[in-house]
Image (cartoon, rainbow, N blue to C red; front, side):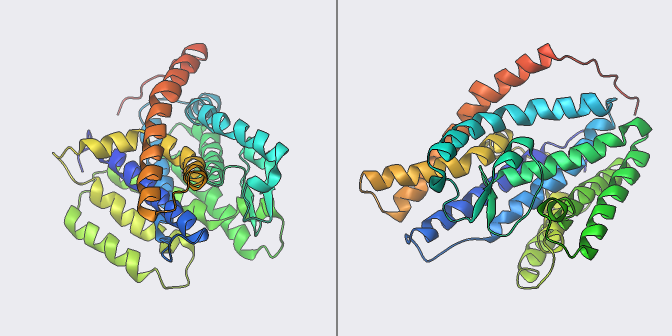
Length: 334
């Protein structure tokens, strides 16, 4: 893997987003009786996202000096505006007719959706069901930022990994049902540690491998671990690690559509549940119940909305907020 070339991570983001979208597209069609097929394994896209986050946060902070405040402010500017843009309409719908939101769930995490608190309770969902992943992202950001005062990237990584492993270990012994403790100690957080470790290997030039071999291993472990009763960070995390290593070792190749997809992956991910649900309702109202029509229109609409939100909202708001809250960052010597 070339140190000056991590463009392939955009491909990974695109692949991750599409795999999650396809999972929810088929799940919706299955739930309303349009098909007997439901593809659940696309949820691995979330695990890929978490590993990417661990890697990228290390990559960024190894090149520029951040403190706790500047780091979290930087992440908040990128993530929160779009989150709240989609959240407020859902709040209005929830207050007017709660049964419409998460109709297949027992209850809804209302305040937790605003505060991005990682909580877990059987049968409960966030207002926007995909927001649970943002909660874990911000948990990781907060832990990671807490160790930035150490300055040295190795010390930062040791501190972050130690705290995450401590939380997960606590969760392994916890027998209670407190949704906050259960959420805080979920072992899926270990996937951020995978990303951290991958960066440390990258930093010392130990991440260069044959991409074809690792792609084969990724596919093999994806299917071999599928039927085993294992924690998610193993079942989906391990194949994601191999896929990550495989793709970032592909050099001198440009796949423009994957780069574009990676660029709008956050917008696609955050909007897709809302868009596909709205598409189904609209098609039902006008009498269309064809599975292919639903897939084509819903998928196309998700990509279009994601692209428009990126260009017309996210990019413009991010530039504005960065100007308003500008923090000068000192570039580190490598």
